[in-house]
Image (cartoon, rainbow, N blue to C red; front, side, top):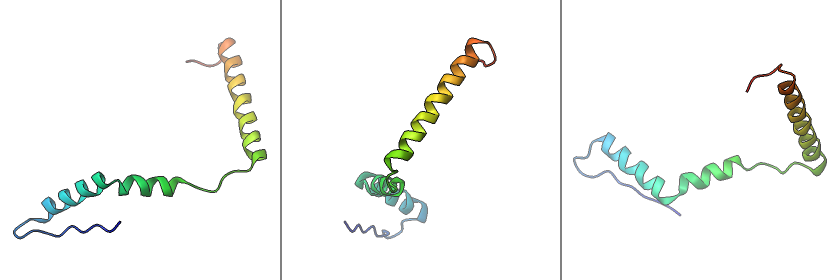
Length: 73
């Protein structure tokens, strides 16, 4: 979706930049670009499983430390 914003006659650059950024935000282009940039290759099942096991183990370890007073909050 091509978008064109032209500078108006006697418009200073900061006003033009403000108008341009508002138009970009309203169009949803920025949101789409950020979504696409963050999307990477999917991890394989084994790697996801190992990560979940690691997180569960850490959670358990923190809970045990809290129980014995080694860790606050």
